[in-house]
Length: 183
Length: 128
Image (tube, rainbow over all chains, first blue to last red; front, side):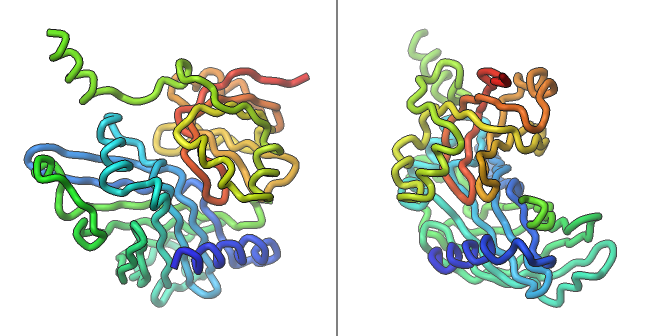
């Protein structure tokens, strides 16, 4: 899956320059929330790379796990060293299709994005309800999803189990611009 | 008492102070991307989570999530260096113009299409 996605991104990078229907966001925002009665944990990543094809309705996302910023450095260390093991799995990826996306529709549309989310080399099908807004020169896509930590074999030591939610909320906001503007 | 202070520090420490971090590598954007293109970024992986100084041409300044980022370029534009800046750098950032030569120091987090550095500070504006 990762190799497929990398290939996809490479192809985009090479072939995208002439295309009018390819959009890029280099600094997409993803925030995750873990709410428990013991502790609330929140982390944000403002360096998410994502590509959108308004012709094929495809979307590809790459997330560098070490780019999440936490309130406290100890949370960052636990996240990268114990839970995600970022040395082994430095990225999470998503590849999917926007169902019934109307690239020409002015204003806002709510759509389902169907695809596969890969974290720690574990790939699961996922559906995301997203809001898509056509902007002056591209699109803004935002939404929320929930991820169960057991689905991705994230092991939390028993002593810290009350501090980490079983169900992690994730929100995202991507502001795509035409790829050719990045030249 | 020292123990309590120590525990408090460990649990509430906000992270690396880039000014105090030892610089492990000082490089230009062109040198960085040359390594990208040869053995990809693997040769640079050893610098992840280490302090890096990088000099390049300012391509863009962005403001996302309450933080400024400087996007530095080399001779080519297909790959950039994304430097998310420390909040105290705002007065210095406001003096910069696209096209300026800038040297920044930050903590390397890894590579996607671009190199990504966080907690960056401006070391100098190197316009000659």
